[in-house]
Image 1 (tube, rainbow over the protein chains, first blue to last red):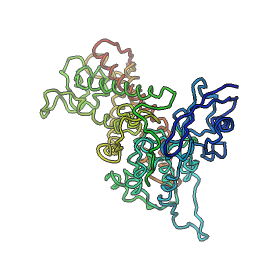
Image 2 (cartoon, rainbow over the protein chains, first blue to last red; image 1 turned 180 degrees about the vertical axis):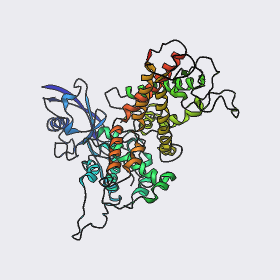
Image 3 (tube, one colour; image 1 turned 90 degrees about the horizontal axis):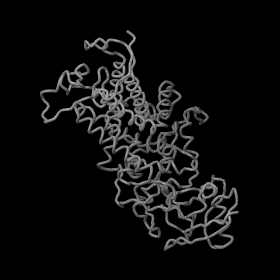
Length: 248
Length: 278
């Protein structure tokens, strides 16, 4: 049993500040456990969003000691307990209350992305033939739990507030899952270049670092999409060589 | 789709709640890259000591025109493609490195890995993940000037050509002039041979793991099962690409070391240990 100090952000969309709390932690506890303990002992009105407590629902995203993390997957015995542990809401989104942010912007962005559009069925019964090898690449992107930690850490959103021009790493991964799907025939590259602002990404790889599902967001989703945009809009030589490229 | 973040006070430059030593990474990148640029620029302007017998510094390869005087240490007439300094050269100083270094420099400058690294280290955009930035304005690679980074694949084409040239230089590193007649025909192995071969190996690992090559070789496709050879190539490039950062740093440091090795041997400070078989 160790007494540990926590600095927890308390406030709403108008204003807020860090407040200090102290609670006892035991072996095996995660930050979410400690937050619940603080809630029970000394801050009954502390708001925090959580659900599965297994790193699969993506609800308990927060910034712990300055880095975006899932509270349920951050073990206290991996941290320096001699210093106060800071817990604050995600800084790329408006705050509702305390540790709860309003992530609805993400859902509005998702609605604007062109949906899956499969080619004509391969078989008379309306089914398609598809090889596992062809979907291996996009299956990595399907692991996303929409915790929005990647959106939170992306400096284009959190520091430069380009929410109107830039859709963020989560939706580049979503685009990549659709765009690289072997059955899909939709063309999303003009949107990626213009309204979704893929050019704003300057490859910091922070999104990859914070992803709790270990999706290689930058190397496997964003850069390949950037390269496809280059193919389509900036590289006359590749366009010339791909005249005979089979249509999707 | 605007978002109101007014309740969150924007962090100042370098401000963060991170408790780790986040500044070490960008600082190391800043120091190493700066040192490399300073050394490479100095070496490129030297126009001497870039050849030691059968060894040619990669900073001067391909040696299109020989810049040194014949017979002086570091004279590279046997490596020169088109003879001595060209008559059309109008600048007051000449160095053959100036003709070729823009290509590998451009390749590294526009490399996806280095871009991310030097935006942090040199421009603090951001200084590190989740650390406050010095500027509010931001253009990214969405418009000029950084939209020009999309030229990367064209530098890649040159980089692949350079690999073949450097491989030929490494091959020449196996043939020594033991008789002193200026004919490099005696097969042998020296420390310099190893240095040149390792340089080609590391540069190949870096170049062939390039993100642009990964797209060009197969990443643009959505169906892999119908093109097994292309898919195998894509898998190989992807394998190298997973360690692109490691290849980038190792090749950068080794190419500088290769120049240092040839230069110091040429200056007589280091001795190249070698033996020939004939």
